[in-house]
Structure formats: structure tokens, C-alpha cells
Amino acid sequence: MDIRSIVLVAAFSGLLVGFNTAVASGAILFIEKDFPLTAFSANLIISSVLFGAFISAMISGEIADRYGRRRLMMFNALLFFCGSLCSFFAPTILWLIISRTIVGFATGISSYVAPLYISELAPFRKRGTMVGLAQLFIVIGIVTAYAIDYGFAFGGHWRLMFGVGVIPALMLFAGLLFVPESPRWLVANNRDHEAQEVLQMVHIGTNVELELFEIKESLDEQRNDWRILFKPWVLPAAIVGFGIAALQQLVGISIFIYYAPAILVYDSGDLASTAILTTFGIGILLVFFTIVALPLIDRWGRRPLLLLGSSGMTLGLLLLSIIFRWPPGSAPVLSWLAVIIYVSSFAISFGPIGWLMITELFPLRIRGLATSLATATIWGVNMLVVSTFIPMAKSLHLSGVFWPYGFFCFLSLLFVYFLVPETKKITLERIEANLRSGKKSRYLGE
Image 1 (cartoon, rainbow, N blue to C red):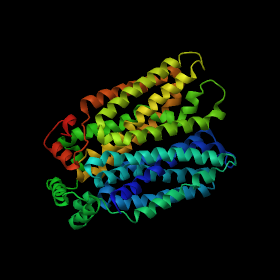
Image 2: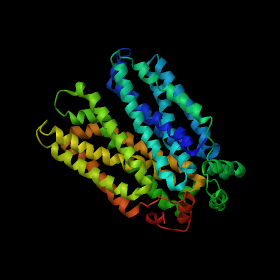
Image 3: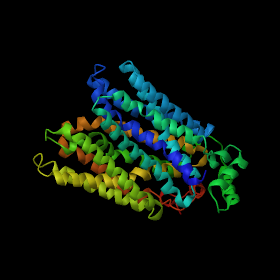
Image 4: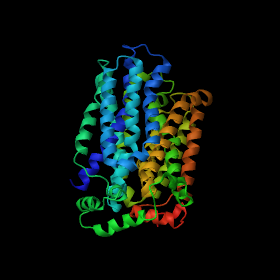
């Protein structure tokens, strides 16, 4: 397989992540015809995926470092298959919650191991675009979930909504049978000959011997020890990596994915008829602007897009705060314009680049562990944002609830400007060498 085919197979994991986080939003409307649902049990069904993702991302990183990226992705495809199948056949609410938690385990692992695998395999000049494909597949998965929900909604077939997930899971497993292991993981596990073969296959026309030497050199002074994460020289990478992870969710994107209909039809009394159209609109915006961003990540760089996105998100939320101080229904066009500004700004910046940068910054020996912990931060903050939005909206009103998220958007602008390095067109080994030489986070990409 060539590098493009390999990257597409790995990035396809993102479709399962997006699909499984979004599909429950439609299915939950019809589950109560088979099972008695309370507000608490309905919330458990939806949040079980987020909880499972948080737990698996927290505990599985060392597995990626010990047993390999490819093996973990294959195991994960089977988890997706089992979780979706069990959701389809669930005889009770408890069974359904457990099934969705299994899907959550797979979601948490996929959300970091696929970008990690791609970043270690891709040529450094195209790393941003190729890792960004995983985020593109996530938003495609979200839109696919909305489409599946809409298609099965007329018959109320919630089991089929969940069960469709077995198809992409089997497709992913089949594709992974033909992809190689990460060459950097192979070197870290003293399998240099296999690593050289993989590099020759995917990096045609490059000096493979030099690249192999640089990978080995970055490992010479390290042991495979999780305590490396707490070494002073790793602190700049930890600050940026975990900071980017937290801010990706603190800026509030989850409230637009889960609550967009309620926001845009505020007090209009027409929620049911516009919900599907609204969620489709948000999904299409995410897909379109993620596609726009992909070639720019390596052309313009990470920092310019992050700065542009932070500015746009701040502006969009400021406009929404002002608009919702007016009487309900006064400016629906302006509301949509503000949401478009916000969602498009996220999609060209923290959406794809957040997942990318947490795979670039950490030393190879603990890259799987550190990336998984950063991903756990993403899912943990996601749960926090989703669970606090409704209480905040009730206490602050919609005109006030956007101010905290707007503050974090502005904070992200300052964070990027002062701390985030530019990592385009630089090898992972060079970033690690800069770390070990004691450079500050802002200059790790030089």
C-alpha cells in the first residue's frame, strides 16, 4: 500500500468516532417506545460514550506504546463492532448503557491512536494535512449519524441507528489487515529492519537511512518509562499539549453539536421541525471548513490558523451574546451568521489542529501515553461542558451563557500567541531534540 491508502485507512477510524458520538442524539427520541426512560437514564445513554472515551483514553496509552499502534487499532475496530452489535440487541436499559460504554471505550482509543499512527508515518512536510484527515472523518461521521438518524426516524428504528455502526467497524478492521506498523514504534522496540522496510515503502525518494538514524538517536538517551512525562525538559510539551486539548473543548464547540437546535430556535416553539435541518447545517459547516483547512495546515502553518480561529470564535460568541439580549426571534439571520462564523473558525483551527499537535510534541518513548492522556483531557472537558451547559443557560440566560465560552476563546488566542510553537515542515525528532535542549515551548518548532 502507498502512504495515501495507509493514511486513509487509519483516518477512517475518525468516522466511527464521529458516528458513535452523534448517533444517540436521534436514537434517544425513539428508545422510550421499547423501554421506560427517565431524564436520568436518557442522559446516561448519551453520556456513556463520553464516559467510556474518557476512561479508555486515560488508561490505554501505555498499551499503544507497549503493543503497537496497529494492533490497538485492530482491537479497537472489534470493540466498535461488539459495542454496536450489543446496542442493536440490547434487551434492557442497563444492557444498552453498557453497550454504549463499550463503544465509548473504542471511541476514546480511536480518537488518539489514529492521529498518532498517522503522525509517525507521514512525511513531515505533509504531516499536518494527513493527520487532519482523521478530524475530517470525525465530522463526516457526525453528518453520517445525522443522516442515518433521519433515514430511520420515520419508522422509529433506533436499534438500526445503533446497529449500522457494525458496517464501518468491519470495514476498518479489514483495511487494517493491510497496513504496516508505525516505523517509529518498530524502532522503539528494536525492530529496525522492519522499520526500514516500512520507511522505504511509504517515504519513496527520501533518505531512509538518515531518517532511521534520527529516530534511533532520539531514543538513545531514553528508557520506556512513564516518569519521563514529569521530567522538567518535557514540561513545555506538556503545557502546550494539555493546554491545546483542554481549550479545544472549553471554547464550547460541544454545545453547538449537541444543542444547536435549542440555540437557533430559541423561544420559537418550532424545535421539532427544525432540529434535523439545524444539526445537518452544523455538520455540513464542520465538514466544509475542515476540508478548507487541510491544505492550509502545512502551507500557512498551525499558528496562523489557530490565531485566526480563536479570533473568529471570540467574535462569533460575542455576536450571539448581543443577539440573545434582544427579543426572541428578532434576528434569526444574524444568529445563523454568528454560528457560521464560530463553527467555521473552529473547523479551520482547533478542530483538526488540536488533534494534530498533541501527537507532535511529546517524546517518542512516551508518545502513546502522553497523547492518550491529552485525549482523555479532551473527553473529560467535553463531558464537563456538555453537563454544565443546561444549568448555566438556566441561571445565566442564553445571552449570558456564551460569555464564559467567549472568555476561553480569547484565552486561547493569548495561549497560542505566547506559548504554541509552529511545527510545520519539521520532523518529530527535531521537535524532541529542541525539547531536550531546553528550548521554551514557543520555539520548539525552530
